[in-house]
Length: 302
Image (cartoon, rainbow, N blue to C red; front, side, top):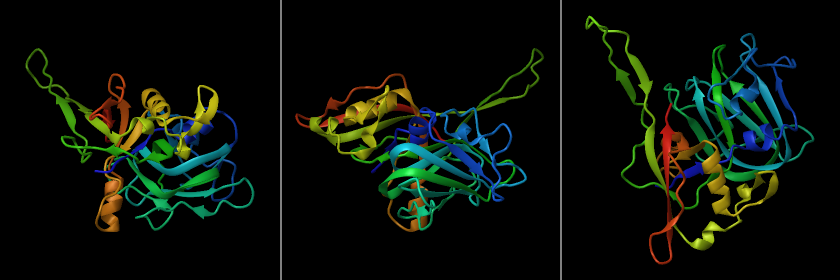
């Protein structure tokens, strides 16, 4: 299956960590603030699942405008940690400069609009890969249909890598979140309250069938970024190795699903929110000329 990796959260790395530019949250009445008190928008781009962004209960809608300090390559997004239903989501608009209105749609097959919603009511991660990469200077993110308790914990927007990203059996698809129940008794053998915990899944992501030269390619515009204060276009091995090791990332295992638009959307929204399991391995030769890169990760579904 043809997969995709969203390694660098440009909202976090190119905006939040740089602490430059300006984030503006505007209500439908053009007020100066549209987020709930204690739940600002930056909570969902700080790469922490312990914080969240909510909209002011009296408004239920906000327009968040982000201006990047430099043009930033984006071709998709992903969301983890939310309670949005299939009738709630976000709308995304962008502009390539800092003047005029922000009114260009992010669209991508099979999506036909710039509004993105989860496929079900199970609070699973969701996202999209757009048709093309765009050099973005400004973004507007609009909340759609939110209630007073709606929230998002992590919003990642950046560049999905698709070359050589595959997954092969055996693996566990992110169909539902498994739980572990711990049954306890007191000294009299009477049952106590049970602990129920989500069980993250161990997965092996495989970057397959690429040459040594592919490790050092600098053709992907996503690899133009700042690492350790140095802005340049990094070779693929340095770019992927750094962000896989240092930050959580998203893995989509079936980007090119066949069938109806609804089926394609459903497959694109089957995501893992991952961290490296232990340490990151190095690529290894699977033949005299080709390499494989096995990435052991812990994947969270909900």
